Structures are given as C-alpha cells and as structure tokens.
Image 1 (cartoon, rainbow over the protein chains, first blue to last red):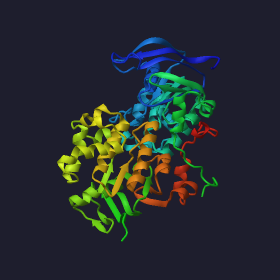
Image 2 (cartoon, rainbow over the protein chains, first blue to last red):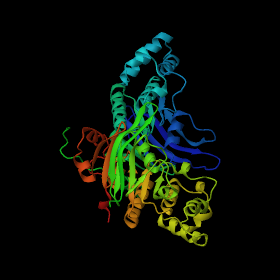
Image 3 (cartoon, rainbow over the protein chains, first blue to last red):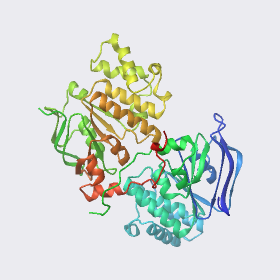
Image 4 (cartoon, one colour):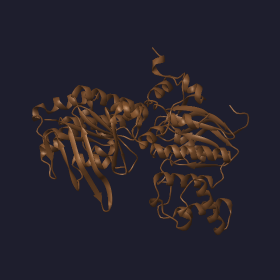
Length: 252
Length: 258
C-alpha cells in the first residue's frame, strides 16, 4: 500500500435489481504514478469497478455501499477504439473539441494542441495536412486517438478498460510501449483492466484478481504470479498458454 | 493417392484489393495447420474460400484427389465443415439444440429418423455436454458451452476437413483452455484434418503440427511447429513471436502442485 493514495476505493458494492452483488466489498488504493491491474474472467466486475470510479455506471446499476475517494480527475480508455470515436467527425476535430472544452483554449489553439498531442502518440504527420475520419485509420491508430482523447483531460488517473484486447499482438506491443512511456513522462496513475495476465504483468506493479464481483487476491505483481495463494488465481495462471522462448534472440 | 487439402495459386480480389495473392498450401491428412497473421492479412478469407463461402478468382483447391469447383455438390460441402469465432452468431437462437444438431444430420442423410435422438446424444457426449441439453436453447448456455455445441454440429456430418476460425478468441482464458483440450482430444480420437486460425501464438502452439504465417494476403512462411517457435525463417515471423507478451520468470506453474 502506498503512503499517499490518490485514489481509494473502500468496500465498494454495486447492485442491480436482479443481482445485489455485482461488485461486492471491493477495496484498493493507488498512489501517484502507480499502476494497478484488475484481472479476472468476464462478468467478474472489473469493468463495472472502473465505471464506478469514472462515475459512469450503466443504467440500472447503483452504488449501494462503500465509497470512492479520489483527489485527482480520471479519464478512461475503452476496449473498442472504433466504438468510442464518433464515426462522423474527423479525429483531429474530435480531439480539438475535447481540448477546447477541458482546457478552455480557443479553437485555433486547441487545434494546434490536438496536433501536438497526436504527434506525441505517434500518429502519422499526414494528419497535419488533412484530417481523417476514424474509418480511414487502422485499429491501432484509432486506439492512439482514444488515448489522446483521455490525455486531453490531463487526468491524474488513467482508467484503461482492456485497451489492447481488440488489437493484434504487434500493435498491442506498440500501444503498451506508448502507454508506459507516457506514464513515465506525465506521471499519471493507472487502473488497468485486462484478462491477459502477461499484459498485466508487463504494465502493473500490483494486481487484484477478481471473481464474481469480489477481489479474491491482491498483491505485488511478481509475488502474486510466483506464489498465488488462491485456487482461482492458480487456475487463471495455469490457463495462460505458454509460448516457447525464441532461440538465439538476435534479429535476422 | 494423397489425401488432405491442396491449394494451388489461389487468388481472391475484392474490388481492387487483392485479399489473397497466389496462395500455395498443403495440409497433410490427420494434421493440423495453424494459420497466424495480423487482422486483415487474409486468414479468414482463405478459410471461407476453402469452405466454399467465397468463390476464388483464380486457383485450384482439391480435397484428396477431388478438385473442388465453383459449384460444389452436396457431398463436397459435407466434407468441409467450419466453426466460427462467435457461437452467439453461428447458432440460431430460435432453434433448440436438438433441432440445431438434427438439421445437418437429416439434410446430409447421415442417420435415419429413428436413430436421430441416439446420435444427437452421442454428439453431445463427445463434446462433454449433458444429454438434458437437447431441449434447451442456445441462450441458456455459457459461451464455452455454445462453442462446444457448434463443434458438435460441425462434427455431426463426419467432415474430412474441419476449419476453425478463431474458435476461442471470444472466450475467457480458462474456458479457452478447456475448449482447446477438447480440440486436442477430438483430433486424436477422430483423426481430424484441421485448419486452425488464430492470432494468439499460445493457442497456435498448443494445437498445431504445422504453422503458416500470412501477411497482406500472402503466405510468408510455412514451417513445422517446433521450428517456427524456436527459429522462424522470416523476419516477420520473428517479429510476431517477439511481440507476444511474456509472463515474468519464475511464474507459478501447475508442476509445483501435486
């Protein structure tokens, strides 16, 4: 546990009419610049926990217990990059709109800021000449735009809901590198939801394993993966299919 | 003569875009070919052409000695069956499991009506689903169970070639493992010839005998599994393998427990 948490979730309980324990008694905290991973199967309440932090619970689901204390603003990166962009609005324009709203800049200044932000995220410079629609970009490029949208809010906490699940392995690697580099540079904290344990181990310093709305185990990433105590965590780790190590290791 | 699937100079174009570019591929009988590549590389197009869902612009596909032509006969269609990524979409929600399984059995005349019930139960048993499932509907099952039912339906007509297009991508890791174990045991029991598509290297490693890599509509590498995962011949194969996120060293493994 960190000394000075910027986000504290205490005994969070989320309920719908049909299921009073969608998320039950979930507690964790994050310090500045730290990354916490939430892992578990679908339906375990990972995404709902994130949405509760963001304050965007789906209709019909209510927070019925516990509290969320956060000293900084948060922004979210969603799983499906195309679904989270407006297909009818060119991407630079979309980003400029968020910057202008959040940072109170003029239209021209926000357009400039949008281009700079997109450049930081490694999008092609051709966007400077000609704005493009989300459908004209690849999945990886769209996800970079979505990350830019989240960063435009200058968040203290970045919430990532399976940001690489819809992407290819090579693109996934690039996005993970981009997010890590930005975190180093901007120092935001992260809550990273994924069901891929290997991705979680690359990104997160601590992990919470969730099952059926509860945290079954949490701890340091390395010690949790090396010596899991809970039977469910052990089963989850065993389900990861091994890929053998490449011989040599030099690029040919 | 040789059995198995033979593909020669297969080309498919969608208005201007070459989706498949002169593909040459052989799958030996009773082996599994794992097809990998990024999205848009043409993996699924290749699967659909082989299954006869897309008519190729050029090229020859033959199963055993028999060339598969533009218009396939009922018997030819029966020989190649396909399992899709999303079982929610591939199982008709308005049909009970009994109807889903019987449809293909009766259409291809595999069994008489009097033996239908018995055969359906056998099929479900083969994919480890309880016989009481027959009168239920797809929405009453979990994603993993639905995929098992889709597998049972594909196997019901005794195909010579089974195509699986990302059959585990929509499933959780733990469920994925059990479905893959099912594939492995079916492969041994029924001597299946399989074309298995996935972008997950772990899945490919678990199931394939041979690995083929596609990129931009071309086959860039075909190699035996062990060789591909140890020393891929092409730089792209290397790139794909090194991009796979790794678990940290010393991770807990099942061998630690008795």
